[in-house]
Image (cartoon, rainbow, N blue to C red):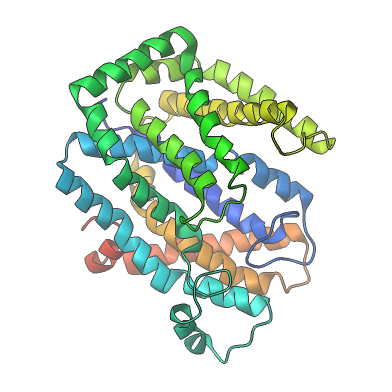
Length: 375
């Protein structure tokens, strides 16, 4: 596992671009609340968002866990903490203070709150308390906040699997994988999901968000586990078609239940426990299939990847702000949903790329603020 894993770079870029499409659809998606909303809503865009939302964030946390393992292999504890702080904590602070406030401002305008200008709104982020009642929050940058916390609290585990005892433990699970495949990972994922019975709502607020926090932390830990043993990757590549078949069948079955109003009642009952297991199997096999085909076909480098891999993190930080600003005006136009969606997607993408390429990429001090290395 010493070679550069270009397939992981490609998958990270693809996942963030899908996130852009996901967020551009949110103003038009039925049954989902968001910062701004179009008057007419689309059930078809809801299905698109539902499908990619099943595995998009788990994919990012898995890749983050794998990447963290690579970092800890060649860095001391102090170097690791410094690297994580520069990469995650500094962009989070800059994002909360400069990037996210325009999102909240336009959300308040959409809600009918009156401000003389953005300059009169901005001081309120320090005086009104935390979102949703107040105007201070990290919105889509919750991923960075959670990832930073995961990186710190997982450090003892990461150091353990780096040791000889840890390697022996990983080897035991690699032996299990040779016998039954990567299906054993479903057990910790299922146990983590059970916390949703006590914390059913995803708040993205870190404090009190134990259901979502534990679920994504489990993906992060599994990623760090997978990243250090080639046997796991051999299985993922070898059985990628098998995993894809299971993921495909699970998706059909889940949507059959959804579209026919046959989903079991939420609670401590056997049908619901089985349905939860079906959902976890669906997500996990999609992830394994994506990793398997990615490892097989995307493990190469070129100029496009070099540019995208460097810029995808600033793009992620910027993209939702432009979506909400442009979207605020787009939803007021008398056009079809598809025209609005395409326009919003195209313009917000160009703005995110343009700001990155013209004002972030060329300047070292700005690069550091967005989690990039010096040129």
